[in-house]
Length: 203
Image (cartoon, rainbow, N blue to C red; front, side, top):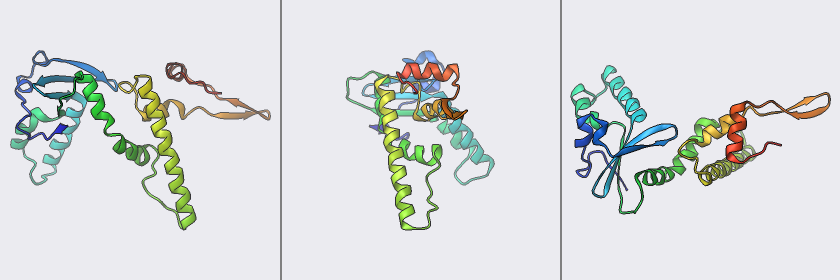
């Protein structure tokens, strides 16, 4: 169960030291290091990229003179930026716990897949039949999204690649017509290596 950042169970003493040696270690997830430490039945995770992003947003809001955003509050919150605290009684490693937590976000990721990757969060259909077709295509897209996600999970690659990464590798592979014959377009070495890793063949 994820804890709110103002939870009394969320102790930031180790983070306030400012020394990674005070933490238990790290693991890689989606190409970035996730640091962690345990407090009885609570595991605290620190994502450096998320921390930088949250600090940037908060300081930007200070610059915009938004209500409630002050340097005093920033200093008070600074050690909790980029953190996720999870209370658990499961016999899992920190990396397994973090991965399980991320899997719970599949629904949000699916809507994000439609909204940002496929840009399908708005319908511009003018009649009922067109709207039904648009909804059906979105449904198929979500099914493909889950199929790709399941494939990445079965290959234990979720810590390295996302569904968006999968699409970015394959979206520039085309069938081209040359002299009345359809042929597969050239693929980069990086894409070929990715397909081999996934056990996929483009035919």
